[in-house]
Length: 373
Image (cartoon, rainbow, N blue to C red; front, side, top):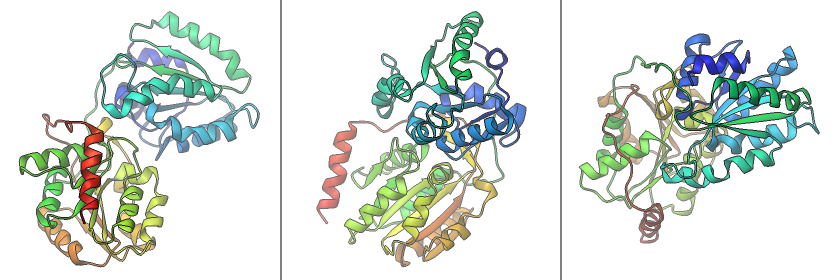
């Protein structure tokens, strides 16, 4: 279905969410119509924030909002749905538009397999009447779904549309910023600068994929790297605990602005940890690039001042290869926690691949590396 037709039938006047690759036609259209933040659309830091924003919209207007998310974000909506929106609490109606990654029978990355299997039951357990929006769902069928859902919404309940891959079509929008250094270049500089025995933890998305491929190009093993293929926003917490338990290792956490914003409180915990053996590298391109490039607020805020306020002992900000190499060298010997913000362009190689092999085997190899210290 064309996304313009979908939105016309849905009829909501407010949308909040976190961009998803399978919902890219929806995300791009909302951004083109309303911008990233305003009275009709808000890109949020995480899906729980989006749910709360939707509740605020309903309380102030009395109209039913819509929240969009990838199914990997269902976990983030559990608290505000169960303890704020639920009919037994404030009874706030809302339509959830959920991109169905890992749909059973559809090939997808391994981190989506289990999430895809349980998405319908999770939404059902949250008390939502859940409808599947298929690739061949017609306008008439969508109208029937919404007519059926109207009674639930009128009763202060929530409903969900679990949207198949390819079910929505629309024009793609290209995104750019004013930076020139590529993320892959920045990661390569880190690998070339850090001592060979150092350990890397990389966030969800293209940063992990690029780290993997650079190791391949440099003919290096992958057993010093842990790639968070899922769990967006949690790389720094995982890296922090490795650093605490293995003080003999220097840990480099490669993070992204969208991921850091999603669970920003982790910076406060890491910054005040006192751990001298960790460098938190925030690659900031101001975009949710792995799902389409829609903007974050990453380029609008001062991560360096936030990091300093959170207690990081050394803070660097770079946007050129020369400055990046210099800051990386200093980080190798600086007392941590160290924070290094790297301003990068949006974009990656069109032939960028994905990590190969078994994730269980990769975990075992990484643990073996740590245990040999």
